[in-house]
Image 1 (spheres, rainbow, N blue to C red):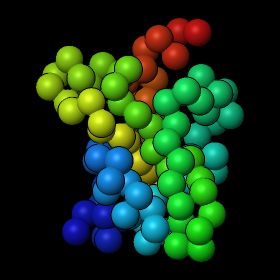
Image 2: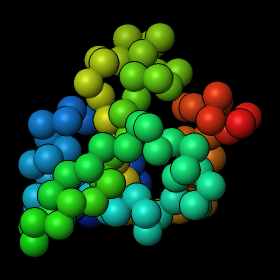
Image 3: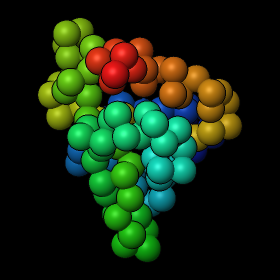
Length: 105
């Protein structure tokens, strides 16, 4: 799997799978990953899920208000970060691209 080998930095998935994978500590806490300013701009889009220890963390970002639904993405899609091994600096840039309204605020 791309997740297990740290090949993929982000995953777009459903809320159900976000919960399932977060319970296995696959996804990272977005408070530890994203710059504070971007985290604040996307606060309304954050989705919390429970980790293996039961701690609730912001693990996903709802994509319904991003650019992606116009390309046919399901409304319940969420983006999660699963690795910082490859290009951690690109993750914030990718989110700014997906949410231009947040980036321009």
